[in-house]
Image (cartoon, rainbow, N blue to C red):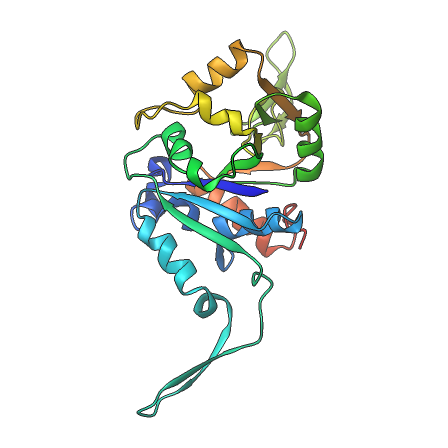
Amino acid sequence: MKVVILCGGKGTRLREETEFRPKPMVPIGKQPILWHIMKYYAHFGHRDFVLCLGYKGDYIKDYFRNYLWNTCDVSLSLGQESKVRFMGRHEEEDWRVTLADTGEESMTAFRIKSIQRYIPKGSLFLLTYGDGLSNIDIKASIKAHKQSGKVCTISAVHPAGRFGSLQMDAKGSIHTFLEKPQMETAFVNGGYMICDYRMFDYLPSDPSMMLERVPMANLARDGELNSFRHEGFWQPMDTYQETQYLNQIWAAGNAPWKVW
């Protein structure tokens, strides 16, 4: 099953990083967050990727063009007949990566519509954003989608708390203060979606169309939008603080998405 990853946004809320590179290439540890997302899907056996490129897409192309340089030790012979030897192997040798230019200014719905030609007609495909990490059960979500018979299944996740939580009595005395609680109670779309090929019927050829607006509303109106509830870890990377948080738990060896 192909994995479509949206990699073209400008990431304006993370301007400290995205002024110089696309958001999916912001590193967590030594590798970009995009690599972490792809490694997670590959763990579940999904290794055929379609990357929807846009803003600074050449940066992503260069990364995969030089993947061996980025992941292996290298031995060089510097004579007139120079030779390069990559030391060892890597686990990504069975990956297939399609790098699709979907327009620098395009919105998410149009980016997906643009890669329709790479999805076998009538097949399911996986879809997510290039800036969020989770330990969602991909296999279980696919099973739930097939059982629903609907066009699209989105992951319903709790957003990470961004503000302190207070518990107060009637007089205003604070009894509990939690700095950025683990989870809020509401659900949001966490990406990690499964789509039927019929999804393309809901996507107009309009570069200004966002997936999260009219297409999703129309899917819900038609009763074709399903959810897979995920109560575990989910963390977007929208701000510099969130980037630091993801790097901290990766460095500490506590990354919930590290299943490989």
